Image (cartoon, rainbow, N blue to C red; front, side, top):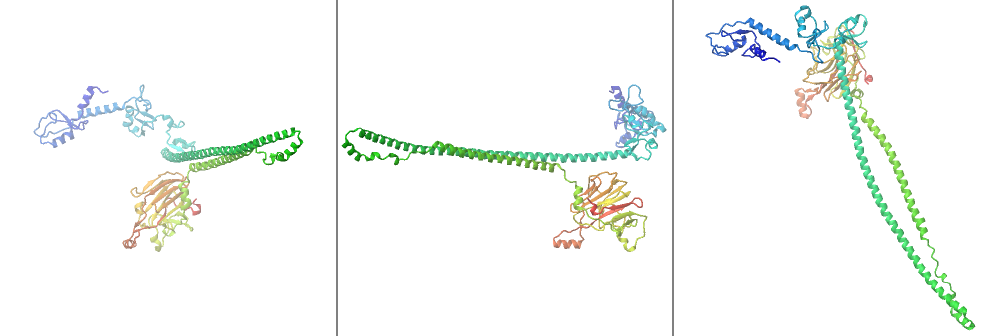
Length: 592
């Protein structure tokens, strides 16, 4: 922490006007110091020439000279202050100075030539000695031993693609002769781009699987609600069935009891009649027994004629009661109830089996739903290739003199140039090596593919039919051009952000085929790396239509139709590389 004396000392080295460190300090006749520019500007803004601090007035503006001794003192103090601020002990995780003995100060720079890190004081020779000034200094880095080739004691500056390892320049002479090597910066950018693409793909997979998860969750919730409703309906049906059975049970019991009462009444009536007949028979038997006891022959014969009714049996008039109510109840009603219950149990067993089969079918349907939800949809490029591919053919009459079109119009080559026929000159590109496709499109969607692996520098895209072929053509949407260019497998593009928004920038190092897709109605031009099936670049919000000529616009006004014309968009190709470079259009049959 700075002391009070040091703070006071710092304040004395500040200009009292600008409150900053002195810049070209000068002294007034009264002995006060100011920045030369500050005191000069102060006197320019006031009518009186006086000292801002002590207010001493001067008859005329004094001649000011820079106080060199005071200036050197100020500079020395500032340097000490800066040096002191930089000389901080290295904390854990910070890079220490390799030269400091004892306590290590925080390193300010790392030298790639000396392979060491220096604090501010030990870095001073690299800022002063001419030979050391040529050394390459970078921000301090730790673990320098991991960045140095242990065999040659040199910094790793290259990357060997063949062995997938970092190498130094000396390694190219022994272990990595004829290997493909690239600068570390190049492979660093490439791997970072790959990581960016991988992260984007993982995010897409996360979104897809999250969507699938939510779809399955929603399906389960919907199925749970449907199951709960089905259970409630079944409970309602069975509750009604149980209530109906209870009613039927009561009705059946009442009916059986009623029938039993009827049978009981019939039996009792018959029993009463039988009782009367028994009583009558007992009376007759008593009379006959009395007649049998008489010894009077005449009395027996006279009584016999008057008692002939005693010989008629009662059984002829009353038949015996033979109904067995217990047999009827047990064999009839119980059997019918048992049969009905058994039939109902069979129906319930059949219903349960049908529910089981329905659950199996429902599980199959659920599995199909899960598979449908979890399976990601086909990529957009596949759908474009299936539905929007067209067979593009090159128009040889529009080709620049350095371009040669094959007879079938599918291959474009770069040559040394040839003479042009004057009658065809206006249709050709006069300055730049470009060529158009034969057919243009003013509506709908179309897609074509081009093999670019045999060309070192190329350009692809679509252009409006109204482009100027005789002057230099700057490829931008304002000029009716939507293109992408590539060189040695690396893509670049020329576009105007104010005209079209650019999406999906993608870096490719080994592309073989590029796909071009146009949606005229939506206003989209997209480019794809067909080999990796990834988007390269997209222009969206494009305007392909143009205002119609005045007379045509007037006619459209009368007819009530659109007053904008729909110019055709033509496939566009160009090459700037070595002679005998070629571009090949994939036939429509090879689009998929």
